[in-house]
Every structure is written in structure tokens, then in C-alpha cells.
Amino acid sequence: MAVGIELERVRRTSGGRVHLTPHVPESGDVVTLCAQTLAAGTYEATEAEADCRNCLRRREDAGRVSSAFFQSDVGAELLQRSLEQARRGRQQQAAASAPSRPKAPAPPARPPAAPRPERQAPAIRELRSRTELRPTFENVYVSPDGVIVRVARGEISHVTFNGPVDVRRRDDVLTVRVGDLVLEFEIR
Ligand SMILES: [Zn+2]
Image (tube, rainbow, N blue to C red; front, side):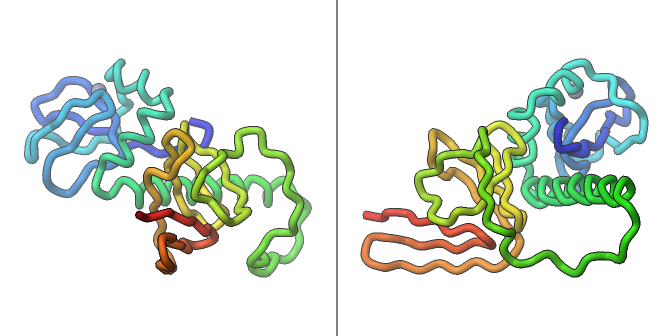
């Protein structure tokens, strides 16, 4: 995975293959990447290497991995955490390779405006801000503030964010500010 999403490993207590899943819950059923539902009490988390071929193959399919995250109750939060971990990892790498210098203060709220033409930048009908969205999975983008957006046919289908949200309705337009994104939805 380009973004280094962490998947967890799970196995039936009766044995068998080690599968992959976004998260092994404390209780309840778990759905594996190969779409098997393991009932509560019949599985355990494991540190063993995954050896389910279907799971391993689907791990390479970004769309499937993102769907698995979005399908799971805690999925969006986990996806966000994974992305943050991946970002921290990259920052640490960058810091390690850069000459040592005192830690920079928090980055400015708005990055210097230098919109480089992002080939994969999505055209999203509802997007009003010029927020730079980074593609993470197929049809899934993340903003600098960590707003995760899922797009279907050029329209927003799912937004998730753990932070400030402001929703206003004016006539037939619903304006939603979520983190560093501004979205406008026409409502009739
Ligand atoms: Zn599997």
C-alpha cells in the first residue's frame, strides 16, 4: 500500500489460515478482507504472518481495502489513524535525512499558495474551497487537516472527520465546513 495502511491479522481459534482485517474488535463479529465473517468468540488476533491468499491478493487492491475500512464501524477512524501514522512515518524519515535543526513550530494554518497541478486532483462538484486533496485510495482523498472524502462519480459520497464542523442552510444551499474543506450541497 502506497500509504502504508496497517491491517491486523486474525485467525479462527479452531486454526486455519491467518486473514487480514482493518481491525480485530474486542467483541462481536469480524469481517476479513476476503469477506468472511468470523462470529464473536470463534477468532483471535494473531501476530502470525497472514497466509490467506485471497486476503493477501485483496490487500493490493486499494479499492477493496478502503471499502473494508469504510464498512467497519470504527473504520473511518482507523483509516484516519493509519494515514496519520503513515504521515508521521514519512515526516520522521524526512527529519532523519535532513540536517538536524531545531524543531519547527506548528505549520501555518494555510500552506503557501503554490497550487502545483496535481494530476489526480479530483473534480468534486460540491467542493468550494481550494483545499489540496491528496489521493489515498481509489476515490478516497484526504485533506491537509485529515478530512477523509470518498467520491463517487464526481460527487461527495462520504466525508469523515474528527474535528470542527459547521453546517449552515441558506435557501436551497447547505454549506458544510468540515476542517479545512468547504462543501456546498444544493437541497431541494
Ligand atoms: Zn482471508
